[in-house]
Length: 412
Image (cartoon, rainbow, N blue to C red; front, side, top):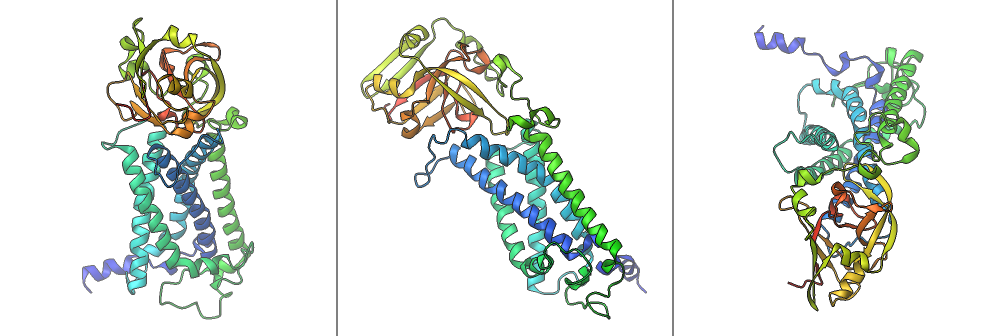
């Protein structure tokens, strides 16, 4: 007997794994939970991407004001939930790695390829997503673009995997809440092309016993508890009622100057000198020409207040009371219409978000402000002094700080 043959004989087969945790019913249920989390991640991630990279045929508006804080909070919560769900799914199905022959046909080959791609892409998304939430940029690529592109790979691989595995999923869920030994081929890990052990679907040894039923339910219960607990311990950065138990939340939304968290400081943005220059003035450019407004000039205009959340792409959010000048009033002052789009430029010299665009629907909204004050006080330097944008239903990265220039209606 050759050495290769002896090694191959030592490799286990799927039927060698007798734990009820590897039952088809367990795999189906964990798969459904994991698939639901992936769908939530994909949809909410797409919403965030389209906010930052809008398309004409699917515009987002300023209402409801809380929408982005909810979708991004769900996105980050679902990402954390994927950690135990992914581990549970991999543990439940890993005996299938040992099926022989490795590929039994095109359908099996497609299934194995889609699983490999799905696992690799999902692990990449979860790991880099968690690192991004904690602002640990140890990877040498632009997170936003790569994360978005990989999300399509994950979603496509999920669709292929579900299409291939749909019969097994239906079988696994056919018993409803019944995790007893009857019904689903005994849950036996039969390799493709294999047969159910002689004696029928219910006569499969330990997997049909009360002990196996307890094992299946215990495993699923543990996965559910771990997922819900991890979600609860992080969701408090978005949902205030859970804030006291947000022990694993990467950010306290109220820890920062003026009781509000900060992602990028003025020093980090390199704007301290320019933002504190007594000669600072907003350059307002529009169809009627250009005008420069000092902070005192802005404070002399009609002032308005808006209670709005600041919602960050990392999932945290907090509500504050902002005061300043309505952007639509500034658009009119520059000779534009109250619903003309406005291009915003920051004092920040470099960075992906040093500029942003306010679509006309946002400009026209009464709560879209060039904010000068926060909770009744002048803006702190790290919150955008001397002036910043605040608008409803808008990612925090687009709420441009340290505003230097507003261009109304596409004016040069």
